[in-house]
Image 1 (spheres, rainbow, N blue to C red):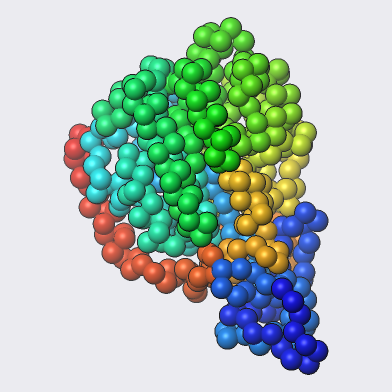
Image 2: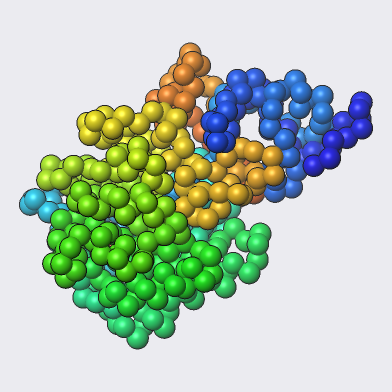
Length: 461
């Protein structure tokens, strides 16, 4: 943007002043007395408060009061339409060395009684909870039975999302193979593949489309090849579950005759647009293909702890990050953890695995690394001139943030998301003073309560 003539301030829509700015740019620049200027959808300047105050004449000013300001958080794997179901699942132990069969039984039962109203109530509650915790973008794993319902909910919340077709499976694998609404079918899987890509015609759309199959042993090599080819052709991410539990990892090893990632590499099915999720059960020879391909590993630290996977195999994801692999965070579903907890859980896993991840590393994973996985690193994920204005403003009225030294640690590991005050997506304020600006929160909660009661009754649990 051209500079205004000397002595004549430029107009901007919003100037966030008196901010402790964590830009998350390549240098992880931090500006203790910073400001961010926004016009329309875009950030037009980031710099020192005194410099931007002289340069701009804003229509509106927000005084951050010295609190942290950073890019919106990005979640690379959330089953939004399962949000209520996940809160109804017992937190009791799975009862065996492998949680896979336990997961499949519990979730399948709820899936088979849920309807469109349940899905919308869940997605709306999910989006609201994400927004209030400073999340501005989410990737759907391809598990919304009706992607339009998920899209409608995220648009109502004002969040970014990218969606895929529901439960594309053409092989009866070890998990979730008995869902009535989306039966395992080669014809259906190939016929539905890529049907959400029409959403990308509008470059300004908040809800976009990507290519997704379910994975975890539910897909043939042919379906995987078709999905990767389609994603490459359309320059979009390709996502699937991989090696979450011992049962699906060993299932792949048996059918391929070698570890999964050696197999995918030999088939030329790895690349920078691949976004594979969980990967709790990895072998030594999996690591090199993952790192060398430039693919994204989506880490769900809560799952590996909740299901006890780490008692059987070490978690290799901190090692992947340390070796230069692209790692992003996903929540998966909220069980005993929730939005904003990933940074703390991942920090402790990294320490225990001997692969220390700093608070800055964790914020990078939560922001710009997630943007790269979505194929949107040129648009979001950091506070830089020309990028979209997806911004989180914290409040200093939170003792966890004080005293404000080692600001990355305060944000990533101590305050978590408990100090979020204001959230902006695409230049639009969707949360202000901790309240959603577009939705009646109590209406969302009442809708979720009715859905939960109906699900419990219909599932007979």
